[in-house]
Length: 315
Image 1 (cartoon, rainbow, N blue to C red):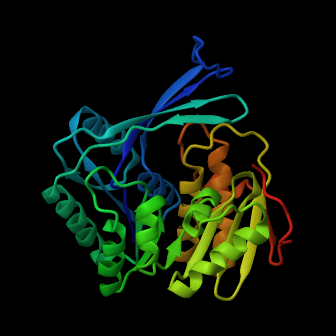
Image 2 (tube, rainbow, N blue to C red; image 1 turned 60 degrees about the vertical axis):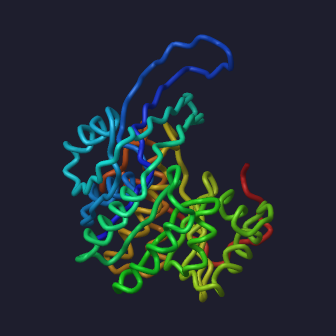
């Protein structure tokens, strides 16, 4: 089983418009509400594709109740932790070509006892797990080393840990030597403190993290696919996307695809192919909808085991 943690979940409201105009009055062509948060998205994608998973998240207020209502028909193993403040709601405005503009709220301020309960819920859920996946931002008052401490606890219990975050929480987690990290290019650039404008720059940045104990780095590159870097190999994979609808949750779906592959016994390069197929399939779905097996299988992925380091990356 794979346990995901989403410390700062959200109800995601996606509004589709013909075009986005700053300061203008626009009419929506479609709207939808989805349970949001990186770890929740990872669990949703895993469950749809047959990988056992449990999702740990705090819930509070009206949006917390709505979150549980939205999750109920999905059949997920949800491990909610009750908190005093309401969880957040995020808004995504999507244009016909898939361009997505997001407005994310900060999230609730957790009390010390709520932070402890969240940590304990992860450890309790992980008793029969193989992976713990720490995903997304931390809400106010949660210490920056929260993920790092969980990495140590999980390792002590014989579990592997993946981290998909940014900023100070990611920096602290890197020092705890997680088995897998899944930054995007901007997050990786932030972690190493320099711009990453080419494939070679991304590879070098990922390699900089391996000596500190990070097992595998999977970097999502948007339209340019994804790169896998570990101590022994560099692999690039990409897929053509014919009909983009929304990029919301695509990186989360990519991470789910990689973990799905690893859980099924794939070698890292084969898991990367699954990851890119998951991510591309998600882009061709509305809102933050996650893909199922048929949608993933329809994606054709190309693999390059010797990517050109001089190749520039799309902005």
